[in-house]
Length: 196
Length: 383
Image 1 (cartoon, helix red, strand yellow):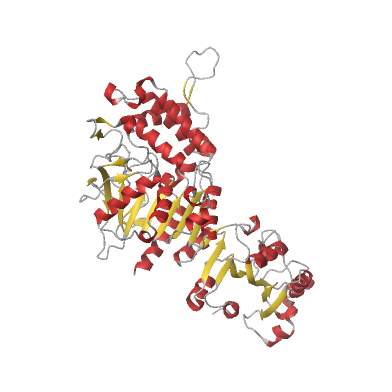
Image 2: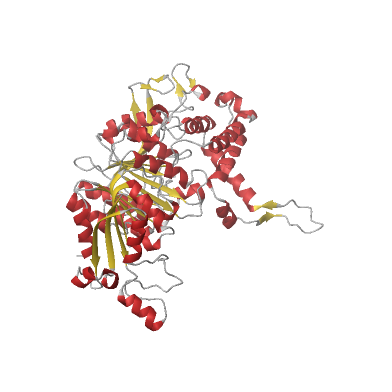
């Protein structure tokens, strides 16, 4: 079981309406549907993932997040979720605004580029980090907007976004003490529960 | 339906004719006292009659959606790539029905049928048709087949309009609505193309105000021309470039040659037009293109598609094709956005294809996978 998914699940209210941006193969939405009886809708661009989500019985719409989310009404969902996608969108700050318009609450998960391994990689090798989590080289990566835990929280302050919860997962996919104590160094994946 | 040609074909099929004696009140205000529908079915209805799928055909389609009519039949039904044992719409699991639309020219009551009031062919006097009329007649068929609720109603293009209308007319009798390359209404450009096609028919000397049968002729030229115009809009620029380019069928551009130059695309279009004019009826073409033009899903719902779809109870699967410029993806997205606004369970897939509007009829791996996945999910719901 993935810890990050467990954490997200704990923040989602039963019987609520959930929009998942970049829903992948639909495993999170399926889990929330089974365990929290949510009404879920996923947006996805990858054909294989879309077929997987359809087969799982989920609602999935083929839509490019970079083309905007204007087709969704204000506060039409209780929670808007985006995991491991923030770094891949063209305008992360604008999508954050859109998420907070459409959902009453939002959950955002992203890889922390401030992790000590990334720092070590860059400082010792002088090259962009390539890891198990981020296996791409700089020129072919879909991840075009890396940020750190500090960067994200600074953006939230600037935009008057309230952080309700923060959860950190380390490189072993555990919610360890070190990652909680020094998130910007030891957190591999950061997950935020935010509202406005 | 006994002889199998291919293991994944429904084999040889025999159309059935159903007679309806309950008068049909039509959307134009007139009443059809009785009528017939010619129907093909594939697969078996299960014990609780919950595996029935209705296929709605498009403008030039018919009830012959899959299989062959005889051993020597060279051409399979129009959606044979998707209907059959083990195919996307698996006839080992689903009972599939497809009826020739009322007003059609493939056996159902239409302009070529005899008008009981005059004992002559209906011709131009056949009542004006709307998509609603097809849905109501299909509902009468549903009762004859002993089906209480369709597992799915599936249609491409004009067929998709029927599927959507079903979802609003009989919300409790359809569980899934699959709309392929559709739109909630035609654009001005769509109507314009249809009008060119109609004018081609109307201006044929052999049309005789629609009473050509009484004059022992058919407006072949007009119908062929109508089809040529339509056919161009069903293909894409790329598809035509791929298939024909500027290849010549005859003649050359060499100096001194007198033979006239003919491009491949010209002869292809003429062939398509001729073949169509042999098999289709001009009055039916006029009726069906008018039904397309008049269709507006939200007209009775304050012109608001969200209000319209809020009456539906089923789940929706919407599919569009990238190169379709007759009903482009943005038209399908209008449907999707209205469904999202109405809080209806919805899936949407935009299939990469170079074949324009015609893509909905052609084999395409992703298209097949998407329909398969959705049908799988319908089946899982069943069990």
